[in-house]
Image (cartoon, rainbow, N blue to C red):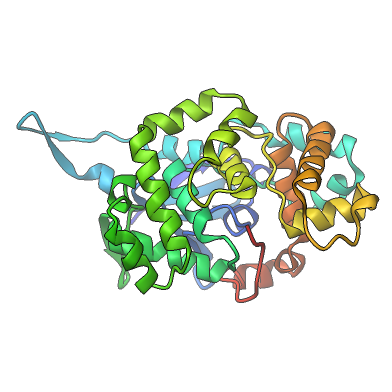
Amino acid sequence: MTWNKLKCNLRELQLVGTLSGGQSFRWAYNKENNEWIGVFSKTVWKLRENDDGLQYQVVGSLHNTKTKMKSKQKESNIDFKKLLEDYFRLDTNLGNYYKEWSEKDELFRSACQQFYGIRMLRQEPVENLFSFICSQNNHISRISTMVEKLCTHYGEKICEHEGNAYYAFPEVEKLTDQKVETELRDLGFGYRAKFIQKSASQIVEWGGVDWFNSLQDMKYKDAKVELMKLHGIGPKVADCICLMSLNHLEALPVDTHVYQIAAQNYLPHLRGKKSVTEKMYAEIGDHFRMLYGDMAGWAHTVLFCADLKKFQQTDTESNESSKPKKKRKKL
């Protein structure tokens, strides 16, 4: 299988920080081949970095399958390069923003030396939402396991590769049946099973993908309020969805890591608090939005990566730990 080239300045895209930074849970690193394999847009991808930028392979894709439309066979004509560019938001000149944020904040200026090229992934809202329902009070290895169970049991099979089967994330309609809650509890989802089934039913009732599209057209805070009407969606998860799949880049999820960053470096009066109250959550988010502007969520993601212990190791150790065993952020 040949590798395709996507020209990209290496300082503009860092795979380890972007793909292991808690945004998506469907990427795995192969140290032996220095490659990443993952799934998005009903497609299995392999990625690797070289001196020219990014190389990619399309291992398998449902976009290539023939579907019947009005009794005729029609094959999808998908621009995979464009899908990848869109996923990594490569139309955004990150260097310019890094320069702007560095001038505003000494901590960012220090962090971005190692954590250059941290992209904010443009993810599909359905997968993003249900992945972060799984993330509540959880660590990343278990979140990844849950997401794969959702795909295996309810998603469409894409392909098999090197002994592994890969599945697309399920359509939201597949998660609405009442039996889904029982099935997910049997699979170890706990209380999240109810949230998944109930919120899936709400989304379908409100218009499915069209409902998500309407949230993108809203102002950030209005979209967040709408998301929090779903079962099991609190402010942190709502902010994750706004930031990572609804193009509201000022959204700023506040978890224990972000609270600690804020209290230690920006808002000392918040130090020593046992929990993040609603008022504190709003204060922290507003502080970063005032500091960084309308892309505060992207900027804070760089600080978040820098705060994680696994990214404070050497590059080799970081890659080796792309399947973390220790607890990470809770949402």
